Length: 278
Image (cartoon, rainbow, N blue to C red; front, top):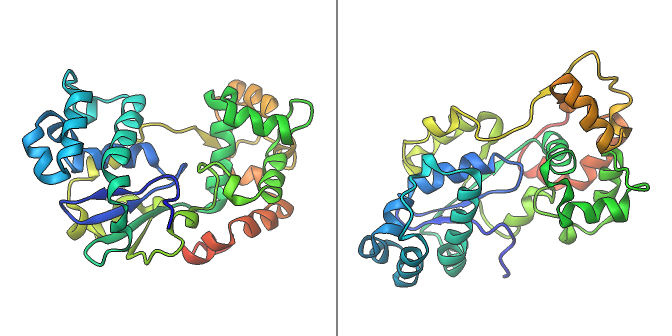
C-alpha cells in the first residue's frame, strides 16, 4: 500500500511508529522526536548510526551534517523541517513496512477537527505561507477576485477530493487508513497522554511540551463580531488581527452552517478519534 504523506516517523530503537499530521503540534513533536532518537549522535557518528539505522542512513547523514554542530534544542523551525525530511526520506520511508509489523507500536497525535481546520486557514492563508504557490493556488481557484474567507475555505474542502487536499487540512485519519493504531494521543492533553505511553517512547518529553515553538494567538475578543468572522476575507482578518494583536478565537469562525459541512469533511476523524460534537 502506498505511503500517505506525511510519512510516519519510525523509531527502530524503541520500536514505535509515530503518525503526525500538519496543524497537530508538528514542530514541537518533531523537536521531541529528533532528541528522542539522539539525532545529533546519529548523524555525527556513522558507526553508532549504522548499527541502529543502517549503513545508507549513516553515510547520508554524515555527508549531509558533518559540518553541523547544532543540537536539536538549538535548531530553528527551518532546521527541524530539514532534519525531519531527511529522516523520513533516509530511514522511515525505507522501512515503512513497520506500519504493519506487530513488533512496533503505532501512535498518532490527534487534534480537534474544528480547531485544526481554523488553525489551518489562519496559519496558511493569513500568515507567511499565503504567497506560497500551494496556498495561493487555492485562493485563485476557489476565492472571489483574490479574496478568500474561512467560509470559502470550508466550501473548497467540501468540493475538492480529499486526495487533493494539502496534508495541513486533509483529514487526519487519511494517513492511518488500514493501520491498527495502538495509541491515540490528543494534542489537547499532550503531556498527560504522552505520560501514558512513556513505557513505549521514553520519559523525556516534558521540556519539549512546556514551550510552544510556534503558534498564533487567538482571543474571543468583543471587538470581533463573530457572525461576520467566517465571511471576512483573509486580508480583512490580517488587518484586524494586526490592530487587535490577536486572531479571533476559534469559535468565532464556526457557525452552525459551517460546522455541518466540517463534520461531513472530517467525519472519520470525529468518529475514530472520539472528538464529540460541541
